Image (cartoon, rainbow, N blue to C red; front, side, top):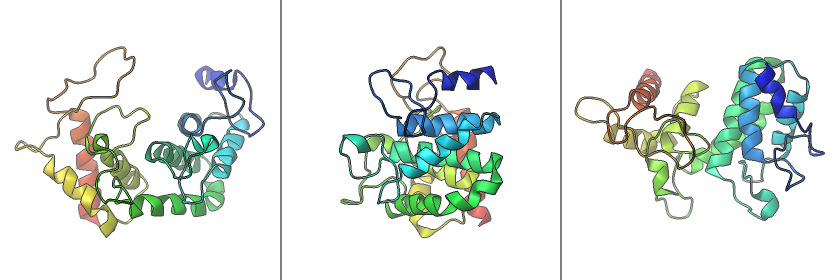
Length: 219
């Protein structure tokens, strides 16, 4: 709980979110999605958590997703920000189910956005929006990839649909002859220890992939 308390070291911004940066006077959407997930997971009792959830709902863009660069002029949602917010709202609803009704419509709009992009494709070309989204690395940190999208829908037990099939096919194509999945190169940034060796079979990615396939085949 003391760790969660530290998120509020500057209080809340006027927009209702949490801001860690002295150089800006507004909250960063992607970070607030991750903060909400942590606060909800640990069932932190501070009532300001509800303000963070409301801030995220207010930041939803017309296309149904979220983008931390919206205030800088970006008009299209970001995969990265959208998945962070969706995971935060998922964990928030699990902790506060009474608030589900106020969140369901916003979440459904974001789901539709991901479906329209086949979970990882450009809406303009039909090709991967970013080649990095076709790779699998764990931990994911702030970056979106196709498996993270599938894993999110598996975690909330959405009924699989045909828009997910390209991502499922990609997942199956990445399975090696031993039935495992490889650890791809992770994001750059400071780490304190490497969980797995790059290019080798990954216990974490294999577990995540098998969970997804179990859900897919059960429906």
